[in-house]
Length: 202
Image (cartoon, rainbow, N blue to C red; front, side, top):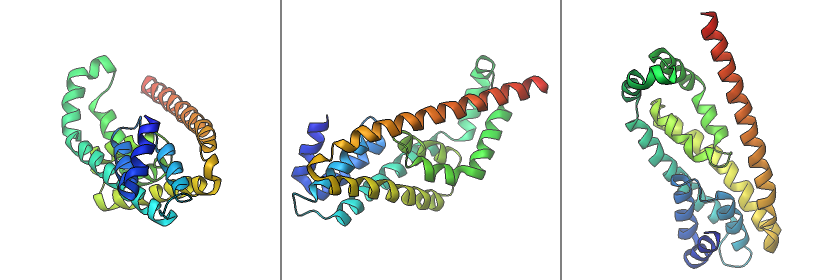
């Protein structure tokens, strides 16, 4: 897959960067690290500029995120209520749990979107709960764009700086991804433990 991505980007330039990063948002298994760092490397061998690659990749990311936000809107709280009414006893969930989660995202969602835009895989999926919680679209776009610009700029600059050694970045990104996933897993476990204890006390 990686060779096909690079070939496509070499052939179509800015449009290739734009399309690949948009697809990366819709299909997270496509690695943004490869697209962005290789895009940075391309600025050393073609007439593409660092600024142009950052703009093209950011536009693609934001459009892809907006599509997933729309998917989240289709899965609103009302529809989730029906799912919980049907499968809640099995999952040990109540409507109140859904309302609490929705209220939490309403309060902290914009920062969650911002920081998650800099975590591989999750950077794409976070758009769905943002839509589900009916986060104001302007705020979603603003914080998605800010987080995306930081992520894209760092990786594109690294690719441009390392030149032919751009693939070295991928090894470090794999370590970063593993650390981020472990941290998220630990936090999720702690939240579950806290939730179970609270349920038992009540």
